[in-house]
Image (cartoon, rainbow, N blue to C red; front, side, top):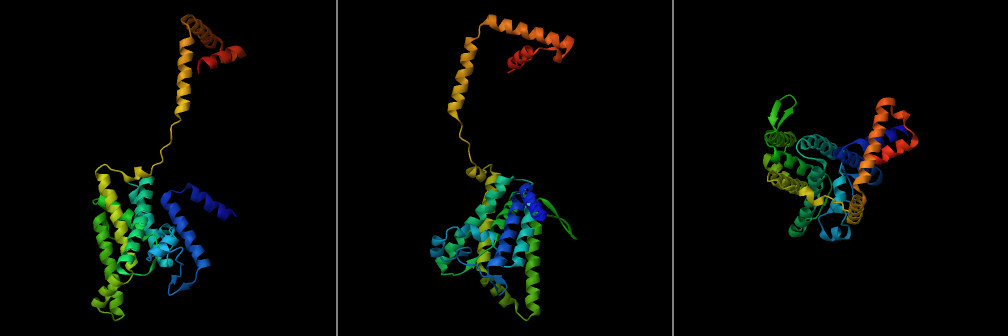
Length: 294
């Protein structure tokens, strides 16, 4: 119980990215308990994962959001969450929590819509899960807004963030190419597979990245789209009106002689305090002084 309480306390005190990491881990643990694991991935139903079939989405519209909290396997989860943890810390250098959540959820939502549209236009059928689109939106927003921001890459030193991003893509490509080369696949087959396999993931990355790019470009022009989702508190005009009328009425009813008399009483009490201290005042004098200070 102490362990669970510590987790709850840590969750309450954490920031938005850490809360999202907690939620994704919890969703993964529940997936391990509830769904079968076949061919190195969980078999999610179409009422949780996002289907490219628009009819499924019409029946289960919440899947445009739920898919972003599910991951196909442990590697998928760890890579996304580590990337989210690192990129969000950079994002907070220039932006706030409201802007982070706006980019994160808009990136995932827009990518879901594009995925379904692609399935409809090109007769593509598949299910998609993962927070990749949302994380890519945050990443591209950061690169677009501050491309010259320096980050430290272990063992290599400092690089501009856009240079590090390109380097990461190249290294990832080379590693996968070498793996396929040693198992006997030609570069042509590898490129064809790269473009044809995991189309849903590619669509999510590109769509989410587009949201991040648009957000950053608008921010450079002084336009913050996160303000669209701000909840404005309604002003209680009735209370304000009553308070104003009451204060005006009270001021108009006070005569100059009353003001002078009250001031003399205050002066006498303050003089008494200076001579004998506050404790020397009677109960009535204390109450009078307290009321006069309001």
